[in-house]
Length: 387
Image (cartoon, rainbow, N blue to C red; front, side, top):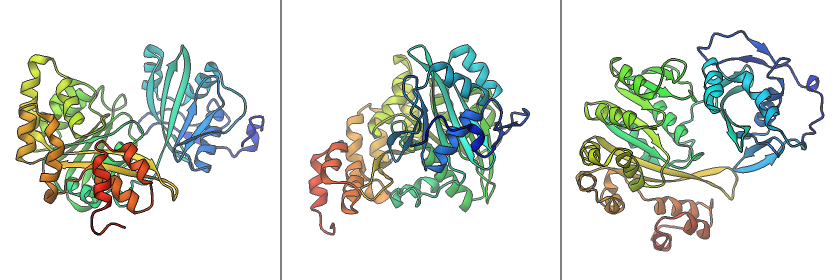
């Protein structure tokens, strides 16, 4: 465990470069961000995913899902604010002063990129800072079922990626974009808050817009992006009805639209969009969504007995039956459509969990705990061909 009274001078100097398009002077590790840079260097050195700064406890990192202290002295809100505020972009700093919550990207030369969320809890400053990988992973590297690749081969339509916070939704979207970029000559436009993965131009041309830096908000960015002749649109998160409306309309008019939602299964993903609108608009949205929606993937990350974390996922490739259920607001029947559309690539969460059990990553008991339909687990595990 790192002792918190080690002198900062004992650590190598780290040069900070602010957000990609935030033309601010460079600041060295000796300046206002020295303590934050120190914490982040420990995060990267120890292979953690997140730095957690919460009043009343020492600075902690999250590694393989476990929260681990890296110092012994509890933090105070002003310590956190003083350490993190200098790392915010100009827009992020203004937003934090106005609303006491802000997201910002942050780059340390020679160390990596990070996503900062500075917020308040119980009237005190707190922060969660995620390390962003320098390399966009492939779908294979994420250990997602091979059928997920079908989402990157769709020519048009709306694809939704659901899951709880920290389940890897953004990483999955980045991997899908990477697959399209690697294989097809298309124009890809992403709208993110903030940019998490930097895509290089490969066969495709990729433009990445950051909310607060390049554009004012998601709806404004989406309207502008539709005038940029895109083939593929990536909306980092659909947070409001207007963004949802424009995204659905874009998918209806021939674009491939990828986006994420904080949901747990296929039915709740569809319901989240419809329920975001006033009651008098919901039937119209259901009709439009049924036309536009082509695929829904939901996922969770589970700790593996062999180390690391593996995704358990559910995929519905929408056919005629699923679209009819959406039109009629009979979302409880969407689960059975997964079985009906297996040939198109659909698979259930229970199938994914059973695969993880067979591969030795999780136990049967863990699979039952995370399953939405636990009665299916034993039946799948007894199926011919399983170990």
